[in-house]
Amino acid sequence: MNTRSDLRAVSTLFGDALSQFAKLFQNEVDLAKAEVGEKMQRVGGAIGFFAAGAILVVPALVMALFALSAALITAGWSQPISYLVSAIVAAVVAGVLFAVGMNRLDARHLAPRETMRQLEKDKDTVKEMVR
Image (cartoon, rainbow, N blue to C red; front, side, top):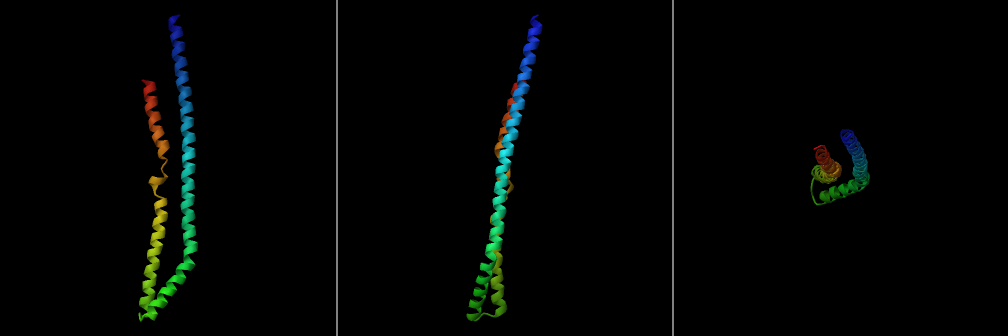
């Protein structure tokens, strides 16, 4: 009789452990969804910066480059050299804009760190439960 009650107690404990594990797994899935959603908002914001930078900087940059070229020509520089200097300035500005956008899309910023940390904790907890 004692063996039967022990067997029921073990099966109850095992069932409880499985239930807790299922709840834990569901909580981790919910956390991962929330964290990925947050990261996707960050990606959307970075894409918005790319688009806004590309759209808004073009007309201003063209006018500034024409003004720079005109100033260099007025100062006695040849037209080809003036336009080349303007092109180099434009390339530097474009490089800065792309660098800012790429920094915002860096994989280290997009990884679901909290979910990964929590999964490690859960793995350790499950290992302890099994022992």
